[in-house]
Each structure stands twice: as structure tokens, then as C-alpha cells.
Length: 296
Image 1 (tube, rainbow, N blue to C red):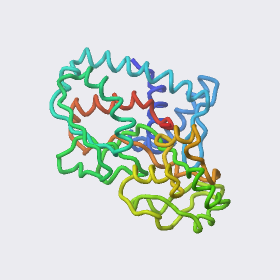
Image 2: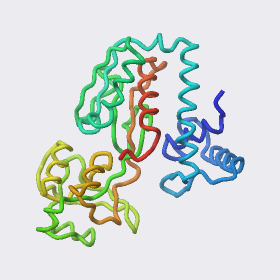
Image 3: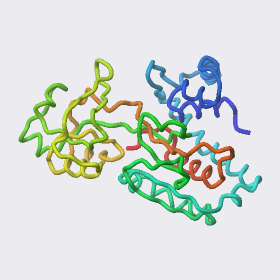
């Protein structure tokens, strides 16, 4: 049996906060906080840095998290074999995901999933528009945002860390903004749904209102325009870390970042009993992404 205190620790990390984990478990935030403190006392180390807005793992907490994930997965796999859950995971399973994230991060997880569950008839649609999960046409959606949507069940896969960035060719022509107010004199790139930008900075959370230099509904268009030197964009590290690493993009206004409340979720409609095919997919994705790590 998996240690219940370790299970609680993973649940808090995966939920993104103690209060979110408490809501998911139908428990009080105070009760979960006390259990987490007892676990830290038992291990003689601090696992989590708490703030009023979010939770961050300490190096010891990250080490424990990374060590526990494969242990929990092994125990769960053994339980599934004994209960016949693998045999029950069959039938049609329709999944939707954002275009860029799906292509870069969801699809690479699928070959191993199909090997494990050959009786699942998988359909994957990549689209940046939200699909109505309550009409029964789609089973699971991968969504990136601060909220999962009313009446839905969400499982947090990761945190989408976002930074402001631009190509050096753009900065050579327009200069580099020194303050957030300077963005008024720059070309901003964003989808219509992304604006206004919600940014965490030295003075807390601020909103930046401004029109996009190019109108688009495609996040991939924004990325390519930023790489082409057309303006400043707010991009997720899972999308642009490689471009930042080799200099195709440069971070600007480094004191600001996208709101850390934005998570990456696997979402489905509420059901009296969640089908095994849905459960095993979400479990597989959670193991693939490794909890609420910065997907970069």
C-alpha cells in the first residue's frame, strides 16, 4: 500500500495548492496543512514553500516528488493487473488538445499508451478552440488556463510558465522595453483570446491591455511571428524554451511573467463512474508529464 502521507503530498503538488487539494478531497485546508507539516517533521526537511497565491517545491520536495511518482505508478499498475483494469480499458476514446501543445507534448506520450492499451480506439483532434465536453462528443480535453470550466472535472498535469520574449531582429529596430508602460510603444503579438495579459510582477498581478499588432486565433501564428521579428509575445516555456536557449528569441521585461495560476489540465465531464479508458489515459499523461513541473 502506498504511504497515505506520500499520497497526500503528491495530491497537493498535482492540485497546485493545499486548498485545491482539500477541495478535491472534501477536506479542510487546515487539516491537510497539518498533515503536510507532520510529514515534513517526519522527514526533518521542508518540502514546500507556501505563499498566499501558490505553492512551490523546495529542492528536497522536488527530489521526493520525482522519487515517489514512479513508485506510485508501479503500485497502481500492479493493482490494475490484479483488478483486471487493463482488460476493462477498451472502446472509443476521443481526445482534444491545443494544436501546439498537443503536437509537441501530448502526441509523444501516445505510442507507449497504445502499446499498453491496444483495445482502446483512440481519436485525437488538435484545435485551439474549446470543445463542449458536456454534449458527449468528446471524452477528454487537454486545456491550459487558470480555470477548467464550470461543471467539469480537471486533473492538473503541469504548470504553464510563460515569459515575454522577442526576436533580436525586432529589438534591434524597436529597442527593448524597460517598463511595462513601454509596451504601449511596441508591437504586441497575441491571440484575441489571450488579451489582456495577466502578469505577475514586483507589485503583484497586473493586467496589460493592448491590441495585437496582428490579429489571429492561432497560438502557432503568434509564435512564428515572434520568431520572425514582428513583435513581443507572451509565450509558454514549453513552446519557446528551445528558441530562448539558442537565441532565436530573447526574454524581455524579465521582472514579469505570466500568471502562475495557469495550469495544464486533463478535463472531462462528471460521470457517476469514470470509464477505465478515461482513467488510464489521464494516469498515463500524469506519469508522462511528471506532475506540476514547468513543462519547458
